[in-house]
Image 1 (tube, rainbow, N blue to C red):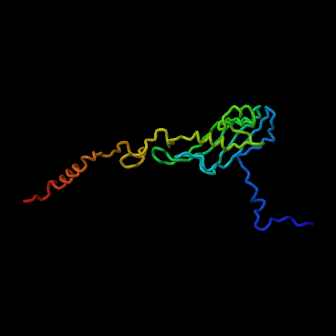
Image 2: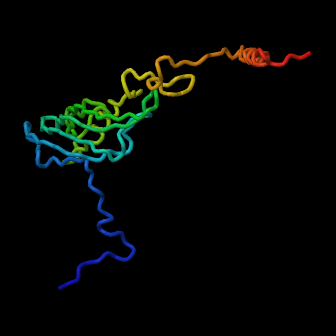
Image 3: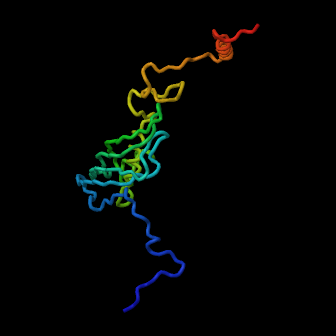
Length: 207
């Protein structure tokens, strides 16, 4: 019985050369191209690293839950359904941590190459079926990032930080305040304070 072939010394193994499967790719062979054909998709995929804005985003590796329906139409594949994804960030007012879960509706047509939709759309306005598959990641990423708030808050009525001491206003008593002195008079105020201390009743007077 002949021995199993081995990799040549110094050559990359067959497993190393094989590209990793893209979890966002959906094969369309089962769906086919007959208009009206449908396929359900329920899949949870780890989030990539770049789904975020400055103050909030989806943590890398967080579970992105897809519940989608793929429908074959004349011009391509219509994808509709919803996406559930956790987000984490920082309150724009008080800087406290913010956590939430987004539940978003999606609907997108992936056009067949050469279809009327592709011919009449700008290149960046239409997503295409690539061979016998579609890549869902750009569609979901755009949907999620566009839904992220530019200025997230921990609560709708967060009062932010105290300008005088930097503490969270919502954690301070209602009568919390700071005496504000106009910087132009700060030196003079200091002199009066010093003089008042020096002239307290009971201090020895100079003869």
